[in-house]
Image (cartoon, rainbow, N blue to C red; front, side):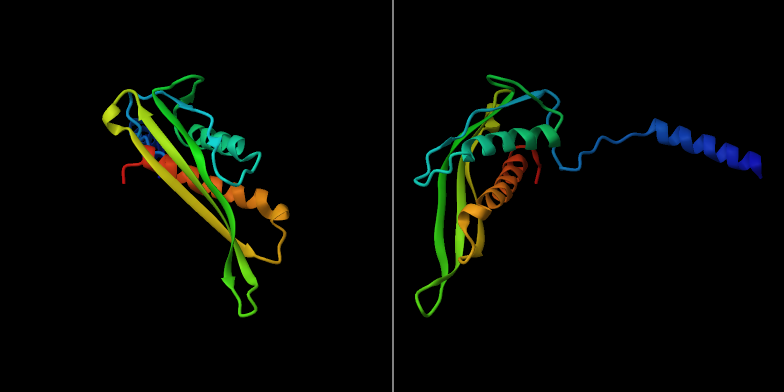
Length: 168
């Protein structure tokens, strides 16, 4: 019985070590000839300016790609390059009640992105990505703005990453 367990263990370990599958949890499918990426600074060209939004978004996109792919971040221009600008950032009332008072307010953000693949230029694209968060109008925007913009940056960078690297 002990010999059978030892033989089974050896066979199982040989099978496991001989077979390997390269998978990523993000679903990214990046060609082998793409090794580097770059993210240019995203200027804030929205009518309403959040002074830290450009920096936070640019760093958020770098972090997303670094953490979810095998690509290395480079200064200048990588094999693939992301550039663009923040084109929309607004706070507006929603759900107006009978007394003409807003029950909810919406914070929204729009980012225009240009993706350049220098190894395969036919894969280049330009697109806008948006996200919004609703909150009760009784809340002070200054108290929750950082949290809401962080959530929207996370959502938008995920959508950018998926458009650039996921085969859907």
